[in-house]
Amino acid sequence: MEEVKEQAPSLPRLGQAAPSFEAVTTHGVLKLDDYKGSWLILFSHPADFTPVCTTEFIAFAEIYPELQKRGVELLGLSVDSVSSHIAWARNVEEKTKVKIPFPIIADLNKEVSTAYGMVHPGQSKTETVRCVFIIDDKQVIRTILYYPLTTGRNMDEILRIIDALQTSDANGVATPANWRPGDKVVVPPPNTQEMAEERLKEGYECVDWYLCRKKL
Amino acid sequence: MACISPDGKPTVSGGKMLVALKAGPCSAEEIAKASGLPVFRVRSGLRELEQAGLTDAKGDKYELSPKGKELADSL
Image 1: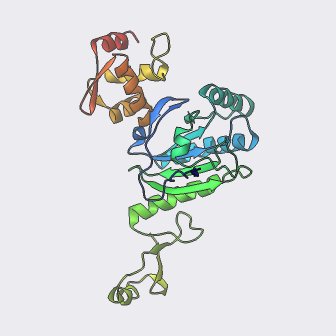
Image 2: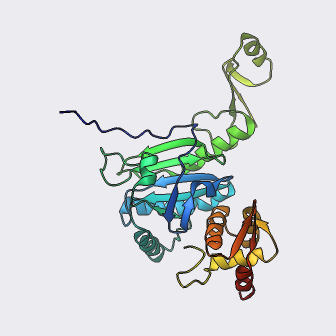
Image 3: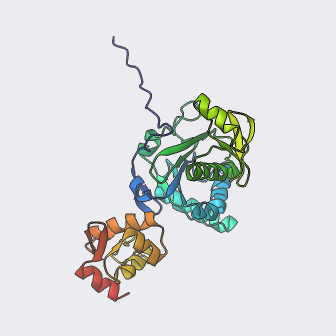
């Protein structure tokens, strides 16, 4: 008898075009293309009316104004229905006075969650784990974060990543560990001996030729 | 439908887009600016308005159809 092997779906990777989609959401039918020119955080949660997800949605709603200042939109997703999403968002507003201002995909057929690798059977065979896809204004995947079902996401880190990516893009630099806006940035390392020698004369704050920082 | 209610009437966001289009042919970005709606909502809404026969697309610009103009004038 021929053995049938389950094929693992190929997952999106950093630097690749984000998988396109057309999905029913709480704000109508949306396509990935609708977000062209804006940055997008596409994030999944396991289920509506669950405690950790509720704290996360409140937290996402709270950072939404800061994200908008940076040209970033938010789009949630779970495998619940639109009716469930609407009821949950209304309940969150009623109980906590926090309005959920961004759309939520009702991925009942798991088309989007499969394309983005959001279901991890080791965690749950039916629910999506806590994924974050940061997609830039050219619809390229720039960051992927996966959190387990038990651990709520850190909004400061998500904002920090957006600031770091946009700073890197605007200035052709990298950002060091624990970087925050206003901190010194890392100058890309030289890739020839001549450039390495010149680098040390350029007035940067250098530990050595391969690690130089500068103020923007 | 986010822009057109099941009874065929425009929603608040649909109405804002129709009113913005009264100024003449506009791009999605121009409608977003005039209506205060995010661009992604406008792009999605324009598909619905076109499907409902209320707007026509000409390249990157959108304009009210005669039916859309009549509706926009009543808002």
